[in-house]
Length: 471
View 1: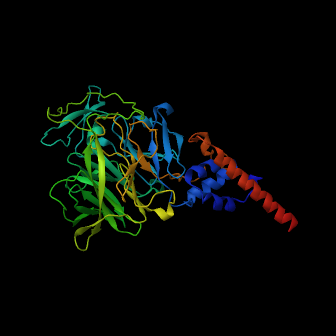
View 2: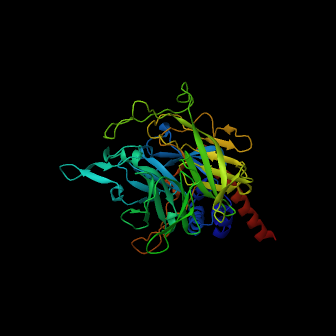
View 3: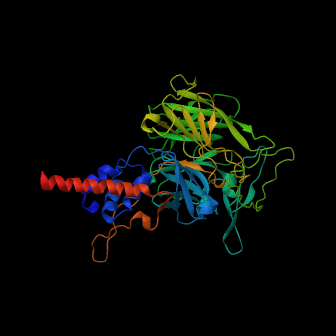
């Protein structure tokens, strides 16, 4: 009976579901999958979705990613295509896509829900990266620079080592599923910016300013904040990129962490956080999955000086500032009101808690962005929820369910596929797409939601038949 429900009615009900339930519903039968596909192609699923935590776990295998749903407080496992996600380095996420570097330090876009992947221009097209070839003409390592104070270089890096030393954070202007987007990367040397448009075969450097910390796309422009609080605006609409400084530096020294974000009402916020060293007697949490990956020494970067040791750091309370561009100043504020912040390696996001009742207003959900996160891959990750009322912190889940590498990151599920057109058979007839359960499947810890939705639609179908026959 469920398959007899009209597609438009199915779509109306599906549109109210969070993405995990939506994917489950789309795998029930071919009719439901058709409604699911139509809904995704039209972009009419429930908006906005609640962010999830993307992570890996050793017990799930090399090619499995995991999502922890804040809305449902449970985990899902996703079977992902190669390259194996546990060997990737997460560098950013936005619009349901992650940006990650593989073991050759090449960048990829990946949608964990649909399985779509996009290879970005080669790392060798960055201004400060030079490939080093072996006797057979194959790239064996890279020559580049690092950001160590006083270092000269260039230094040579193994193919998978460059990603740890070169990239800082990567950003998206829009949903890559639409085919029109810009990727911007903060990278060494000295945390500069480069970008690539969809279809570009190389990275283009932006004007040579240094020490950028975070970016946000707003009203067709990219706002980039430096570690001193200055804001540069980049306009990509013309044949050449226009750049101007709209806010001067707010302090004379670099703050440890600076984020920039647009609020639901359109304001810009700067978020500052300092860092605090982990106590000497504290190491990896007993309830964490330590799963350290082996470190290779196949690079010639000079070793840290004898008096320097990269300690594990934890975030201490954040400071919030509203950006007043007209007055060229920052206005400190102590509260987010009804808003919620998501901060970390993903693009910084500000949501309204009234639209996300599962989230806590005036709280910051944060993941680890420690500067030395690649140096000590087996250290406990600082991930949790911070109350701005009393600066108290709580864990996302306990015991820790994720591996420490790659470091977990926020992602907002996006079920839109890049190519929405159905494939054609040899005879020219439409061939139905395979339901998502066939390859890109969510392996659910509890499957009662599908049964519930199926029962709901069965009852609805029975009611419709009753009305038609007896009324």
